[in-house]
View (cartoon, rainbow, N blue to C red):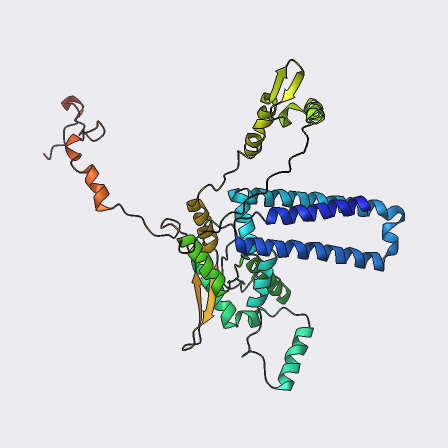
Amino acid sequence: MQDHLAKSRSLCRSFLRAASYLPDNFARAYIHKHIVLRFRDSLDKQQSRANKNPWRSTGLHITTTELSINRAIAKGQKKLNVLIRAAQGGRQCLSKVLMIVHGRIGRRKRELIKQLLEDDSDEIPGDTTALEAMLNEDRDGKFHLEGLLARPKLNSFLCSQHLNQEKDVRGTIKTTTPKIPEENIWGRTLPLKRVESIKRCWWASTLKNILPPLPRDEFERLKGLSNGKIPLAAIPPKRSPAKPLYKCNDKKDELQFIQMLRAPLRKIDELQINSIECTSQGLKMKHDTSVAQSQSQDWREKKIRCPRSMRRLYGKIWSLTSTISEDVNTGKWIVEWGHGSSKFMSGQVIRPHPRDAELFQGLEKFYVTSLTNRKKVRPSSHIAAPPSLC
């Protein structure tokens, strides 16, 4: 058990260390809070289970607990690798982290959806008897979709996302209301159970694909980062690795040679083989290539190397976010959606400038009529004579 505690403690520290190198101040704060909350929740669940069932940690059930802990640690290690690649500038991993931070996927998305589904103050009845009747209706356990769609805030947001959603996103809202046929395949009226199941399936898919609105300040921050009005945050510098007081790399090199001999060829990097130097005293490692080796490990993944690509990434996240506000005069809900940082990503048609069109003026006289454009003339022998009118 002590081994598992040491592994989980080391994993938590690695998560916090990787989160401190993210190139975004808001993302660093949220991911740090999220990591601490997840580890504390798992610790509380484990303690509550141990208090309820003391026999789980003894006897035959110890193997199942060890397997579950090992699976959780392996899953956490995979998530840690994603966070490390995001801190190193991996575009796909950093995009996933920003989607989690701004509530497009994950835990914060569920929290924002819960805020969107909260009852408005106008819908709560002021009469005590009416309030008791509404609570008694909810106790029946029936699914009242009509009451949810009747809320103007939710209904206006669903219609707005249906009209302004991105086409390249996998999950989209296809319809704003469930399509319920009047009759089944036998020409009979649809049963009430079937109607309720159709509503439940539509509501489940809608909750899965909905992109809840963000607060106004966070929406404006994404807008400024994508447009360049807000300067990008400086990437925190990495700490230099610890240097030994005395140079004793002989044993370290020998252990590295043994590991290379035991490892299969597909896992050995070419730089590791090239770093071996044959001297009169034996084989030695060239320690100058350690930096180049660490930089060439993730060469397959696209990395963000300039501020422009970082603004494009912010524009992609901003195009999936929105903010909602109520008009004081009309009482209607107004939804505002973001768009990409470039004109092409925002949906605007890019037209050539007249200054660029001057480069191609006067090229018509150099055109050569191709064989396909020439008029084909058939020989007179193959042309049939028209029928005589006589």
